[in-house]
Image 1: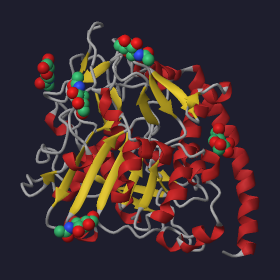
Image 2: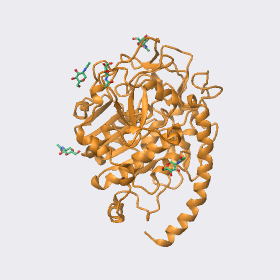
Image 3: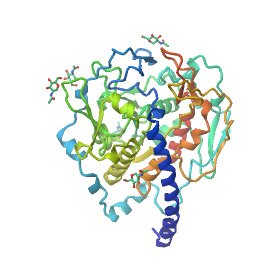
Image 4: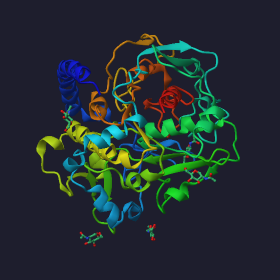
Length: 458
Ligand SMILES: *[C@@H]1O[C@H](CO)[C@@H](O)[C@H](O)[C@H]1NC(C)=O
Ligand SMILES: *[C@@H]1O[C@H](CO)[C@@H](O)[C@H](O)[C@H]1NC(C)=O
Ligand SMILES: *[C@@H]1O[C@H](CO)[C@@H](O)[C@H](O)[C@H]1NC(C)=O
Ligand SMILES: *[C@@H]1O[C@H](CO)[C@@H](O)[C@H](O)[C@H]1NC(C)=O
Ligand SMILES: *[C@@H]1O[C@H](CO)[C@@H](O)[C@H](O)[C@H]1NC(C)=O
């Protein structure tokens, strides 16, 4: 690390911090004013969805609206963690950051060190490419949820499938699945996050298998405790193993990236402690198995979702009493910072592990919101431009949290903002037809590009 460089960087980041602060303040203000703007049908998740929202029909994976009396019952005993893990996870957050500089330097070679100039993959442009998509939307039935496979819906326009992202000045190797699997020999790639993380997981499964039926790929969910609990509509995640290269790709559902612990395990309507300052138990338990970890969160951070799920904020093992932290934007920022700090302090113990924090996936509701008739009807790709020129991420929370740590940013926000035509839109398979999905993406589609960017940076 060179001292001169450091000073220049500091001066520059000071003024940038100011800009970020102002922008974030405005964003947070807007967020708090209209929390439901961030709610979408992510209700296809566990715990209890409110009557006004939706859940996923387990038989065909479509989103259906719920009758007010219906409740999703979850076997919450599965979330209970052992005493040892409890202690591991509840180390005071502040003590975590007390890392010696030696520890950090020794491990710099495993991630982008501050000396090598890191290329900004998020700066560049979309270009038409006849070699896209990377797999067939009809041929990847095995890994895609029917609700996200737009080729299986009434949708007739598929021009959104024919583009790739060209970073301005980074090496962007063409994705080739056998080369990818060879590189991932003996490795485990784990996605932890909300349903947008699940989309990225399904996309990578299609990319890695080519979307063909792949009888050799085995379901190894059990190995990670990913089995459907009695009464649940589906497991908390999935894990698949590629025997030829001994590669595992898995996904675990954690919408908030905080540790959820039911307060009364014998009460199915119990409140759930949402520990903002410690990672999900699953992550703590299996982190030693992972070689690549991709995190995301964002769209569940609103008051409606928290209330519906009976999530109660906890900090330091106790109900949160800090009024400022109780504000959703602050709570999210605190959680993201906590998990990044936790990872940064534990990474020295897992030298093979690379962690990426994916920035937020943009929503595109026009003329209303998800529940007030908002739509995303444009079918012409890139009608709003094809280039991202800015240097900074459009997600200042994630950008701020990973700064100066060994956790890398997978910045897809601005890139994806240009692709409003790539959402499920009105073609959602669901019980009610009056709601457009302008949050999730068609697959194949935009999340494939997120994976190409991921693979280029592993
Ligand atoms: C999915 O299943 C539900 C109930 O089982 C049914 O009402 C709905 O029509 C099905 N959707 C599709 C697309 O098959
Ligand atoms: C598969 O990879 C794991 C590491 O992820 C390794 O521990 C194991 O020995 C490998 N198995 C074989 C058969 O090579
Ligand atoms: C919940 O899961 C636990 C352990 O996985 C099991 O022992 C228990 O019988 C289950 N309870 C219900 C109601 O399914
Ligand atoms: C937990 O829930 C059960 C069932 O509703 C109830 O009987 C019990 O009193 C509760 N325990 C505590 C400690 O609140
Ligand atoms: C997020 O949290 C970090 C660490 O506590 C703090 O430095 C930063 O100012 C916070 N950002 C926002 C936007 O609240």
